[in-house]
Length: 269
Ligand code: NI
Image 1 (cartoon, rainbow, N blue to C red):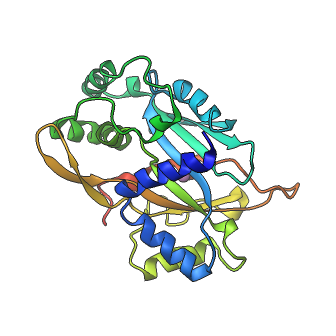
Image 2 (cartoon, rainbow, N blue to C red):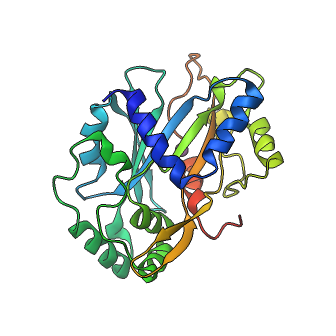
């Protein structure tokens, strides 16, 4: 599958869970009079499952992506890998997965029931990346229980596979644009930002500075009733060149750790 087709399909699915994304894209493209390019697109999944990173990686290869780097988030019980395309104009891809066996027993039970429903041969085609849930709807009570120990687990169990966020490349905007200006533009237009770890995560020394919106709540059907919960968010990334003059293409774990909290229901919207 061509990368352009892959990302078009992903975006069309993503905007249903990120109702603000098209408005922000429009705001940027009119402010800077240029098309918007993506820095990276990120996904969430379950480790040791038919949809684990190991199972998804060959499907990314079908789109032209190869592994680039690896990351561990001990506090959030996550492992992640980044992927780069053979065409450097294509965005990076960031896959994270939940080490669910490190959660409390009651959370492990809920996730164990979810994973039993996923056929072993589920990962066959790149369209899995926007295929939503492969299990029956969870109950609201189970959602709340998961959320109390892992907000990531709750989000993933309710939504399944989608682009969790797209990320605007600030470097691809005209020269005057920088992360401080982008944050001000978002404030001026009343978009709520994720403040965990500060609005701007990372410093020039990190070679990557990031900000993100707080995922707006969307109504999701649970087994017993419908409830509003955080959907998907939009991220903004500015990269700096390293000593050799090459733009940094990695991720900064301390920053990514806080970006995950963009779907935290406890942050004020
Ligand atoms: Ni990201």
